[in-house]
Amino acid sequence: MFTRNKLTTLVAVSTLLLALNSALSGSASAAGTSIVDGNAQLLTPLLDSTNTAAIDKDGNDQQRMADGWVKNGWYGSGLVYQVTYAPSGGLLNMTYHVTDKSGAPVVNKPVILRVGKGYSASTSMIRVDGRNTDQRGGKGALSNKIDQLNITHNTDYFGNVTFSLQNIDEPTVGVPQPKSYTDAPDISVDGLNDYHTQTLLAINNENFMDIAGQYSDHSVMTSIYYFKHDSLPSTQVATRPTLKLVAPVLNSTNSFTTAAGVKGAYVNVGSSVVIAYKVLDDAGVALPNANVEIKNGATTLTAVSDSMGYAVFTIQDTHTKGEAKPASLTAAPASAGAVALSVTPKVVGASSTTADALELHFFGTPIAAKATSTTITCAKGKTFVKVKGINPKCPKGYTKK
Image (cartoon, rainbow, N blue to C red; front, side):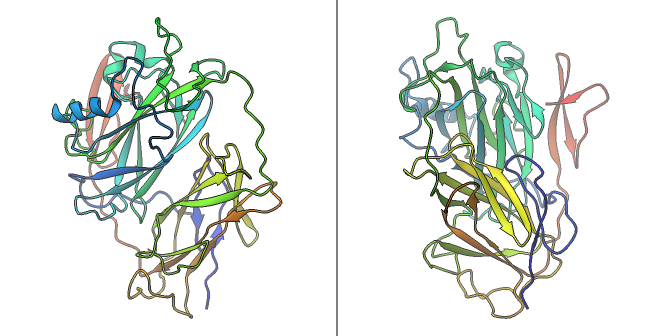
């Protein structure tokens, strides 16, 4: 017997929930204690030497500066620091892969994205999960010392976690549009065109706000400079777009199928899964602002590709019992008793779409969740306090940063 899956309605830009033959569930609970010596890798957007500025406007090597911060004891070894661009008013889906010191995925754990990170002089207005950073907050000496936003999400079954960053600056502001994303930001002498935000993923979230609070994290820091278009963006042809699966990362070691254009994975029942695609136009160029659909029966879910062409969904399984546990990650699924979901996305309005298909098989029973303590920072005027506990709340009169 094949158990069909039921998709729910769209609940947020690029963040979707999937209910499988039961009521829609909330976010998965945290399990265990904080991760020490955790590692983070940025999956979306994929940043490398072709789309990052290695040198700043003063000729300083960006990564060398980060290496110096590690030597100071502020961050763990291997800190990756990258500088890139996005258009003013643009959306970026930032998806991370988190592993522990043994290389195993960190599953169902709370991690924190530090947006407008303290000491980064971040100046752009960013909206995440309905919360906004302070307007031009990084210009103030006090506000520069604290994060403008701390957003907590749980990692999924594969150790992936995603955050949707919407820039809400006016499209007419920002640094000049770079000829190449490898160029240093062209910041004016008075700094008035400097619109940027800096993000950093905190894995061990106990004391991450301290000056050396992330010394045990081996993470990724990203500065995003927002530019104003010199002219209208060129029109892209997307009658036959291509969608490449980016997350989960599946290959011959963890996919039960090696067929071209198809990936298959086993997932523990009750888990969440981040599914990310890179959307390309007919010429193979990243396609922003495309409506990407996942259909299952009569139900459709939609996500919008971001400024770099990434469309991201988050699904949540709510089964209470799945298939028998497979003998290995690459073992063929059983022919009977399948509890599975097949995902084949398409771009709305395209005459045809070439896409990587994803098949997920859910096994076992839900993993029992354990409550864990987290720390939040609360502000009241110029006063800041930390509150630690399970589901901590700010004192009366304070707001969460």
